[in-house]
Length: 108
Figure (cartoon, rainbow, N blue to C red):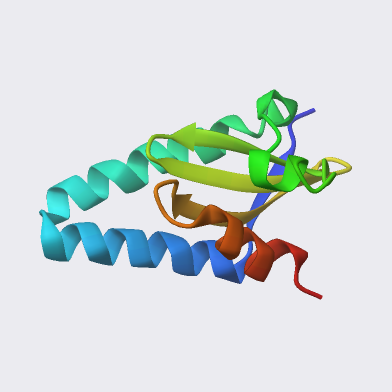
């Protein structure tokens, strides 16, 4: 039985921001392509959610309940709860991921 995949509101904003940035600084067609590829990566989590690795920034803190998959340079951070996969963050991995993860995932 496949898993259900859900994007949090933050992850939806991440996608909108990624699209807007690429469309404004490159081309809308390239923004469409990137979103399609990220969608494929996210969609693959329906069948194989445990294939992702532990984000190194969280693993260093002893947090191993989140995983990540890539469409380089983008990182998709998610958590598997039962038969559901929740996407928490989609970001360019060249950003300051430690600060971003602290703010988004480890903040109370």
